[in-house]
Amino acid sequence: MRGVISIAITLAIVAGLAHTLILKKMYADHGHDILIAFGAPSGETIQMHTAVKYRMVMRDPVQQDDQGRFLWNEWIEAHFRLRDESGKRLGLRRSGSSSLVEKSRAAAAADFFLITSLTKGQNYTMDFIPEMDKPQVYRHTFSAPHDAKDVWHEKFLPVTDAS
Image (cartoon, rainbow, N blue to C red; front, side, top):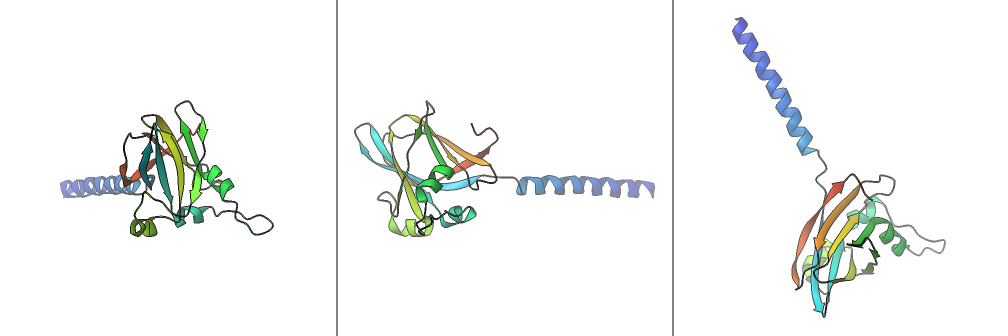
């Protein structure tokens, strides 16, 4: 009888540990998938279009000035940081459409796009900060391709050191 009780207790402990580990993995921060497209190569540069979804904006909504105009440039600057390998911050231009993303895909994927030109073959780091009052940063490091690249969702992973 003691053997059966010991086995039952051991199984309960093992099941509890397994359940805890599974829940921990399930609720871990897996990052953000962000749609990116590269195209329109010209000389030594290539365009990068990054899709910004409605839900990304709604987590920390864009502010308005006293005349009701949306302060998009400030919102973009606060929530997205694109840097080259020397650490220089690059500008991102907001656009309502993308010439690199099919309209059917864009309608389902983006509220607007961030567009910039990059030097082919150079390394870049892009950070996404969903909410300014919660300083969690998600980062994607990449090398600008030499040729146009199909649209894909890139994983921006959480980072602890956002410097």
